[in-house]
Length: 326
Image (spheres, rainbow, N blue to C red):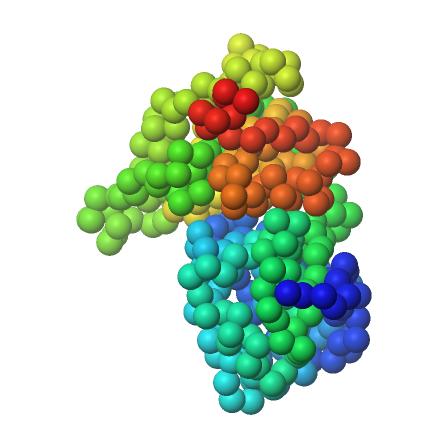
């Protein structure tokens, strides 16, 4: 079990690399992941690091965080393979704040055998506790700090978004993948093959969006979200139109549209973490809903980073029978 001093500031951990070349291994995924990357870049700028194009020319390797090191997704495990052997294994490795679980991976063993130092940041306490229960080697340090999207706070970019905020609709964002409230992903909405081959992306998105929105208005979460918005926020479909879109999906909306749907919202009800984070940073009335209590990603990040944000309300899964009977 980990007993060494716990690091509590990502930027302070990066400060020794001020003015030095570092490689930032960026995350690829949905629009929420794009906010994580933008925040990670901002953290590097605040620490004065000089980001280079390849890990070979860097003094240290920084890996953008997220849910990729969790048992739900696990995609980052493959991304890290190249840092376990050869010359890159000797370089310091800093894994930015992440949701962590190691049940189905040899990650712990591979990290422990790296000759270079490794710093592993959790972004919520449940992940930290899972990490602290592991037997790490002497070259591994653990830390706890906010999701890197919070580094966008007070940036010129965020201030620009704030200057354009409106209150035009109620935005309801329900994810229906491996992290859905019901635990079952929905079937993918696929465009016709001819359209996929010949049509521009904007047209593909329009075709998929129409079917997507119809499916999102006939769910238990949608009905709960509308009722909760009226009850706790005082915002009703009689006042503003309801926009039920999982805006984090790149196949449904562009990143610019993702931003505008949040900035134009009178309120946001969401099971998507980074939709809630950006809405809260923009001071929008925000209802965030967590799913799997064992995974505890959203509830943990709310407790770690958002309890003092007056515009945010958090609910455990309202569709969970155990929650209803509690």
